[in-house]
Image 1: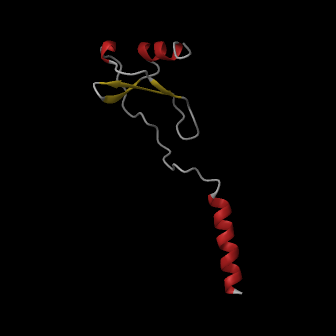
Image 2: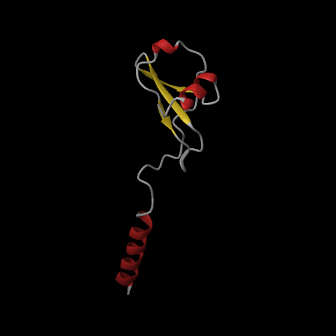
Image 3: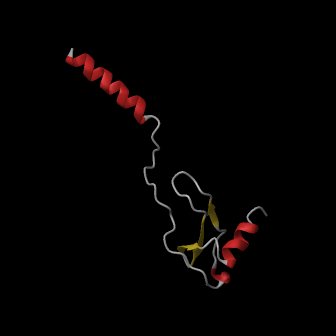
Length: 87
């Protein structure tokens, strides 16, 4: 009887675990934003993360001098990047 209960509990655990995301981090990538910097220093295309279940914010990440920095989407530069993302 104990082995039957163990098997049933193990099966329930497997079925429940299948729906869980692999990345359990529910944090946003951007915590601190920069608003002003020389745009000529941007090395790569900005990476835009749309809001998701893990982070409710739109995030814009640019690479400046081999460091990733977050741009505030509400800043003039952030609005310009979001406007031109489809080009």
